[in-house]
Picture 1 (tube, one colour):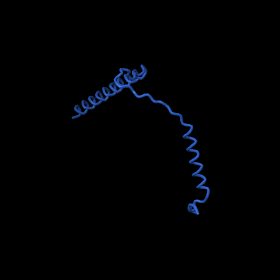
Picture 2: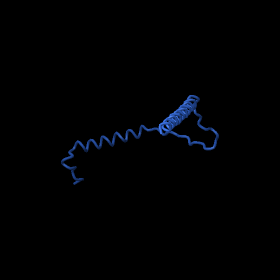
Picture 3: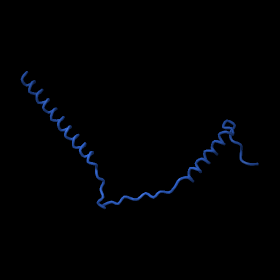
Picture 4: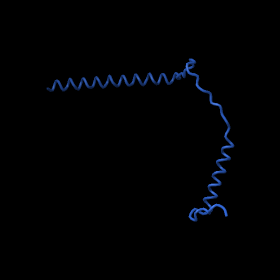
Length: 87
């Protein structure tokens, strides 16, 4: 006789959808081209170099954070001194 019919709830549309999906995937797979990705060469001395602007940005942000910590330390010391004077 043949395979049993699909469930009545799913109907013929879902079976057609699955077939369409399978065909779409097969056509997609045939369009894929093989690409060679070179392996990294460890220890070759060709390290990744940061751009000059990123180095300058890093230095600026470090200086800014250092200045902020100095400002906080100064404000804390002034607050401690004021509290000491009140007591």
